[in-house]
Image (cartoon, rainbow, N blue to C red; front, top):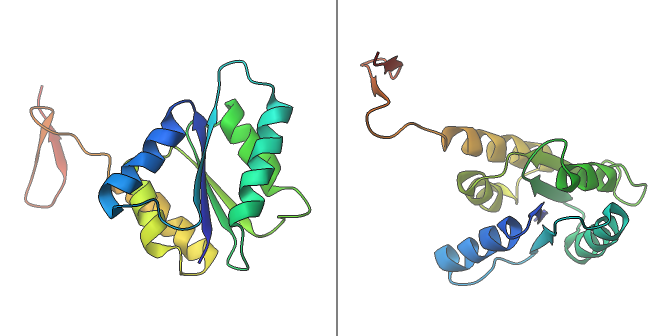
Length: 146
C-alpha cells in the first residue's frame, strides 16, 4: 500500500487529513499532512517532508498530493521525488482536492502509476458546476446559458 503525503499551504494539508478522519472514523494508515507556513524556509520544509516521507514510504511507493504548481509545497514535493532515496518511487500531483484524496486512499493498493492516474481522474471528476451555471444535455455535455 502506497503512502500518501499531503504537502500544502497551511492549514490546507491538515484540513484534508482531518476530512479523512471525518469520513473514515480515523486517519488512514500511512497518510501524513505537512502544512507549509507562510514565509517558511524551503530547506526546513524539505527536511520536514523527507522525515514525513520516510515514515510512510514503502515498497509500493509514495504519492504526494500538493496544492498549487510552482508554489513552495509543490517545489518541495518535486525535490523530494527526485532525491536518490526516493527516486522512481514517488509520484506528485498538484491541485489536490477532496475527491482526489478519496481516490488516492481507495486505490493506493494498486501499482503507484495506476493509483496516481485514478487519483488525478477523481480530482478532475470532482470539479463540476452546480446550480445555474449551465445545463447538462442528454449526451452529458455542458450547455452554458448566456
